[in-house]
Length: 513
Image 1 (tube, helix red, strand yellow):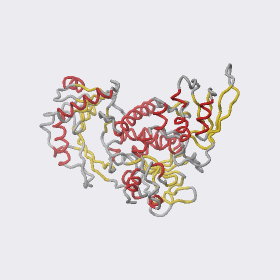
Image 2: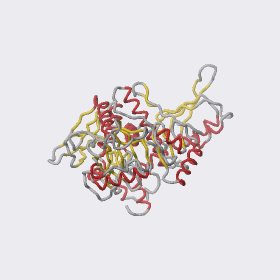
Image 3: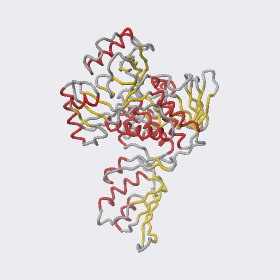
Image 4: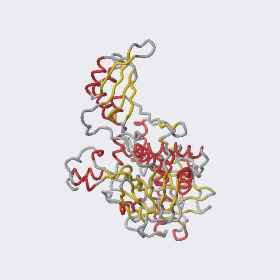
C-alpha cells in the first residue's frame, strides 16, 4: 500500500509469525513487537522467532516492545540483541528496548543499506519493462534517464496491437501461479492509480475466459478452483453454458473465468507510465548504448561513437534480449517471434470477453478483433506472414470452432514482436550477478541466491516473454524497492525464482562456473 503521495509504503504480510518472518526479504532499522503477554501467546516469543528477527535486522537496528518478560530478554540476548529495561507508559512500569549488536556479520543477514552518490538512474529500454521501472523510481524521487534506441517508446514487442492479462492457476499453487497472481493484482492496483492521476490508456476490463484444451484439462481447472478457494472476483470455474453467457456466444467448453481480466494496448500503457514519470524523467530517443563503463561510483552509458550518453550510479537493463550484449547474464536468452492477426470489423462476430486457451481472441471494439499468437523460434522476419496468420486462424478454430471458417490468411493484416524468453520461462528481475567473481569461488555460492556476488549498481528487468503486462508493474516495484533498500514486495522464494543470480547458482551447483 502506497500512502501519503507514495512517501510511505506499507507492506503487509498475513499469517503466523513463525511462517511469515522467514519469507520476508527486508533489512530493518527499527523493529516494534506486539505487547501481548508471552504466556498468552508463547509462539510469538520463541528463540527461533528472535533469531529470524536478527536475520532481518541491520547491525545497530533498534527493537522495542511493551513486554518486559525475562524470557523475552533472554531470547533476544541469545539472538545478538542487547536488551535493556526502560520506563513504561501509563500503568506499565517497564518496557523493553534492544539494539542489534552482532559480534560478526551474519552470513545470511540483512544487507547494508545502499548508499548512492546521487539519486539518479539510467534505464535502458522504453518498453513495458523500462517504463514500469522508470515510473516506480520517479515516484520515489529519483531522476531517471530513459534511453531508447528507437525514435519512440514501445517500438518493439510492447508495440503489439493488443495484449491480454490474467494469472496462472494450478491446484498446487505453484511458483508460477503465485508469481502471476502477484503480478496481476499489483498491475491492477497500479493501473487504477494511473487512471486516478489522469493517465488513461484504454484498459478494457471485459473479463477473460480461459478454456480447457480437453475434458481432462477442464476437470483439472474445476478441481484447482475448488481446492484453492480463491475469491470469486479473482477466478471462478464456469461450465459451458455459463461460459457462453459471459462470452455472448455459444462455446463448446467450460473453463476459468477471470472477472478482472481483460486487454490493453501496450503502447498506450507505456505512454501512460512515461507521462506519469515525466516530472523526473529525461528521455533519450534514437540512442543506442554500445557499452557500459564503470567510472568510480558511476556507470557511463557509451554511444557507438565512444561518447557518453548519460552517467548515473544505478543502471537498469530493461532492453529485452539485447541486455546480454551489455553484460553477461549467465543464461541463454531466446528471441522468439510472435505474430498477431488483426480481424477487420464484420469478419467475425467477436465475443464480449477475451477468450484464451490454445491461443487467444481479443475483441478490440467496433466489431474488430485480434487473434494470437504464434511462437516462432529461429524466425527473425519482422513482417507478418500468411503462414503466421494461418496458424493463428487454426488456434482460433480450436478455441471457437467455426467462427472464422470464411477467413483467408492471405488477406489479413497483423503485427510482429519478439519475446525475450529465459530457460525456465521466468523473468530476470533484480540485481545482476557478477558471474566472474562467483566463478573464482564456486564452493561458496551453492546455497541461497543472495550469497552470489553482484555487479554494483546494475539491475535487470527483462525476460518477460509473453507476460509483459503481468510483470511490468511488479518488476518496476521490485527493482525500485531493491535500489532503495526497501522490503521486497514478494515472498523470499518468489524473489529467488526471478532473481537474475539463479542461473549462476544452478551452474555453481553443477560445477560449471
